[in-house]
Length: 106
Image 1 (cartoon, rainbow, N blue to C red):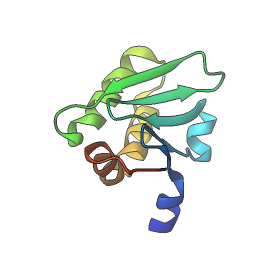
Image 2: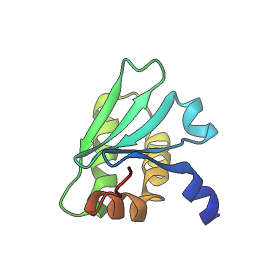
Image 3: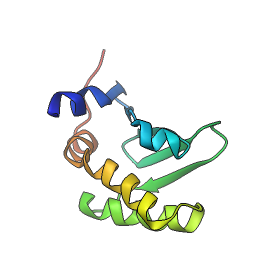
Image 4: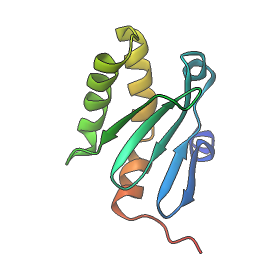
């Protein structure tokens, strides 16, 4: 399973990473999840709508913040919101590691 997770977490440059979404999230209309050193962004199909969440001091609080923003800005039900948040939480170690020390790509 960790190999699949590693394949889904893609570093585009020393400024951005992407998490490839699964079929369930695509079915909800999520196109991709992108992260920078300052924020995590959930981009919806069509690219006209996205939710950007700044990283809190503790990465563990990111998922509660994501849930809150999805609840405020979308019409997803709580089960869908929990699934999205849990999906992101699966990558918390990689996100935290990348945010703290982004790799040098040349």
